[in-house]
Amino acid sequence: MTVLPDDGLELAAAFPDVSHEQWQGLVAGVLRKSGKDVEGAAAEEALSTALEDGLRTRPLYTAHDTAPDPGYPGFAPFVRAGRAEGNTVGGWDVRQRHAAADGDAVLADLENGVTSVWLVVGEGGIPVPSLGRVLDGVYLDLAPVVLDAGPDVEAAATELLRLYAERGVAKEAARGALGADPLGHEARTGQGYGFGAVAALARRCAEEYPGLRALTVDALPYHEAGGSAAQELGCSLATAVTYLRELTAAGLSAEQAFGQVEFRYAATADQFLTIAKLRAARRLWARVAQVCGVPAAGAQLQHAVTSPVMMSRRDPWVNMLRTTIATLAAGAGGADAVTVLPFDDALGLPDAFARRIARNTSTILIEESHLSRVIDPAGGSWYVERLTDELAHAGWEFFQWIEGLGGQAAALRSQRLGQELAETWRARSAKLAKRREPVTGVSEFPFLAERPVERRPAPATPSGGLPRVRRDEAFEALRARSDAHLAATGARPRVFLATIGPAAAHTARATFASNLFQAGGLEPVTAGTFEESGATEVCLCSSDALYAEQAQEEAERLRSVGAAHVFLAGRPGQYPGVDSYVFAGCDAVAVLSAALDRMGVS
Image (cartoon, rainbow, N blue to C red; front, side, top):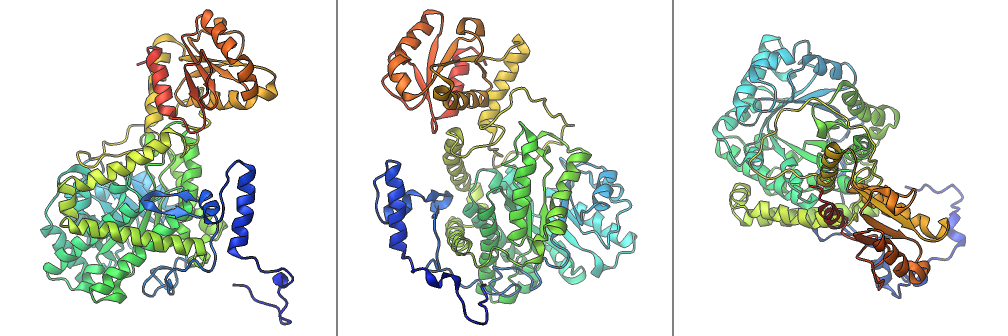
């Protein structure tokens, strides 16, 4: 908010007001210089960016881009925060995930900035009988414990509650979540488990343990299956509504039922979309509470986890940048707890260094950047408020679609939900393949000579339900083929870059081609001649003017000395002797896969 000085001086007063139409005219003039002849709203649309769920990010937002009043922090519709104080008192809960029975690692985290632990218990995690050993030395009245035990939730919860009693932790001092999520487990494995024990745990928590929540609505299975932000919201809402029906049918009041549910969402490196998603999630849950007649119970408790989908296996150090942006977005979006996955999470069990970097990411943002000292720092931004509103509507529409199928369980079992998520992922995969969504270190700026980062294998994750996808998977498959060829022959498949003309004419396209071929594990060769390179394929690199003069001649010469396939770096044209083209927006995965096929690299 701008506060005017006492004399009322406005620095902008000397400048004439500019209308939106005038701005569009200026945009059209700039676009005209780049060859796009568009006017008015079409000029603005040309600068817009398409998002998933039919949303678009426009280049300019003004006070005319209205959105519903987000209210105040701690009050319905809870868009700005679930609590009046937000995270200003001590920052968000720094929650570290552990899937191995390593009590030393748990203690090291809690002694160095982590404020709660998220334990994977049961199959693929910590054995239930080992829970006490893993938590040995942990002050259970100070450090909240969150369980993720799948069908072993009853046994794991019973063991945790026994530990509370054994170690003298008062029931009102216990904090955390038991993590029951039957539908989330079914989404992961295709196998559900009964709700009877879950309802009993919820009743016990509601009556005896005010700081414990029995259920977790985990939206990560839908995010990891390729779902969009709105689909993630819709699935979480449909799951939570199912749980509300089950809990109230088991005898809990509506207020008690709402108090037994925690939500888990993915935080991605798209910071504004993540901020808007968390704000929209709170608004949607508040709407459900309003419809159920308990609006004051609609404050959503949120746990944000940095996205596993965005984590790369090649050049994993870049994951530190991705998780930093995601953590910033989660904090700015008002998440109550944030888990930063270690940068080597996709490679196996994280080492001590990776865990330290992960926990310090939140510590630096809280203690040094003071991100948590402002409640809802993005609130009031015309862009963020509009995106929040649009995403809330898209999420509610997807929730209604699921309800129309009979609810979350029916949508999962009918395969309809999986088909919708797969369709969304297919569209995104096309963008990834064309590098419209670049992955640094993988599809852009790859480093073929990097030393692989090796980690101990992580326990096998539950499977059998929705697939788990990663942004790097298509390029990772190409690189794996190249690695196998290197191991078998001692050399990577190669492409010779034939530059034409002076450096000023060919450097840009040679650099582009080198970057593209390395993304598929093909080693670009620029030194010496084609005959000396050991390559069977070649890529011409130069300017359009020199292509017109020399491309045909150079292609014929290279074929005469053994080139089996000739690429040209540039837009497709009529150049005799050229077999295919590489250019910005081409299907890089298809081009690179075909090249490896021709070279016999399997």
